[in-house]
Length: 121
Image (cartoon, rainbow, N blue to C red; front, side):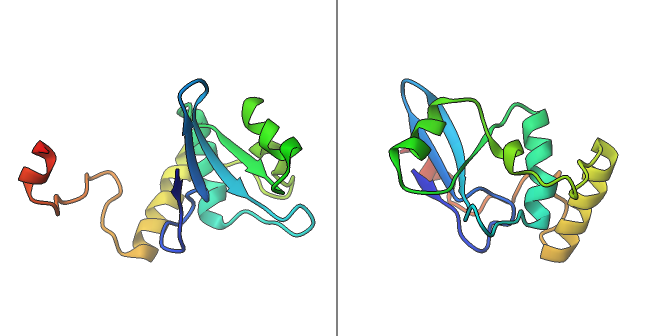
């Protein structure tokens, strides 16, 4: 399991993996008061277009856990007022996020920051 943090904009809260069902990106939302952040509204449609699925859970109950064995449900929480961006709009919005975060061009791979011997372990 991996958990997200405040520095990972648009990334779901949890990354889960189970051998028999595979990987699950999971975001936890309050069912009465939730929203998607701007980066989530930008990244999640793009992720889905590339075959990456996201599940929303709203409680620590068996019924909620069972959702992880069903099709992805994040679009059930998508509000009609959030227009689904086109691919051209996604590219423009991703450029905006990059400028906001000052991380350089998102299309470029990150600079290698770990000694190459680390990869040989």
